[in-house]
Length: 151
Image 1 (cartoon, rainbow, N blue to C red):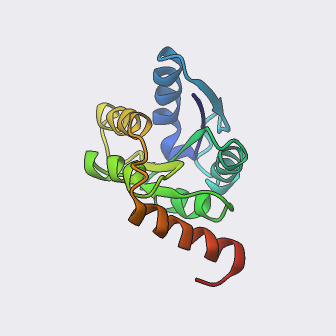
Image 2 (image 1 turned 60 degrees about the horizontal axis):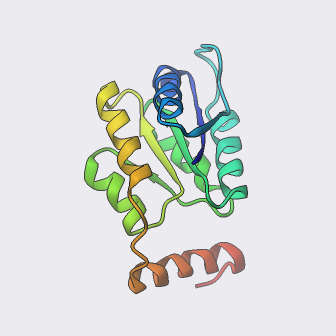
C-alpha cells in the first residue's frame, strides 16, 4: 500500500521510525518531509502535501505527525477529499477506519512512546472500513458539505 507521511520538527523522529517500519513491511512510503531538523519549521508545509497526495490516490493512506497531532490534523482536513482523524489510543485508531473511513491519521509525537505510535499506525492500516449504512450515510453528508457547502 502507498502511504504518504509528513510531520514537523516535533514529529520528525517518529516519522523517520514509521517510514522505516512501514517500508520493512513492504509498503510504498512517500516521505513529504521534513528531512532535517529545523525547530522553527511549520507543519502545514509538510502535512498539507502529504494530505494532497493521499487525496489524489484514493487507495493510499496518510500519516501526519507533530507535537500533539492537533494542528497537523487540522491542516490535513483543509484538503478536499481528506478525512483526517487524531488518534491517541487503539480504539480511536480502529474507529477512524471502521466508522469514518479516515484516509489520514494524525499522531502526537510528544504524546506517545515509539511502540505506541507504531501500534496505532499498524492498527489504522490493518483496519478496514465497515461500509455500515449509517457510516456511509454520515460520510456522504460530510462529502456533500465539502463539495456543495450545504448538508
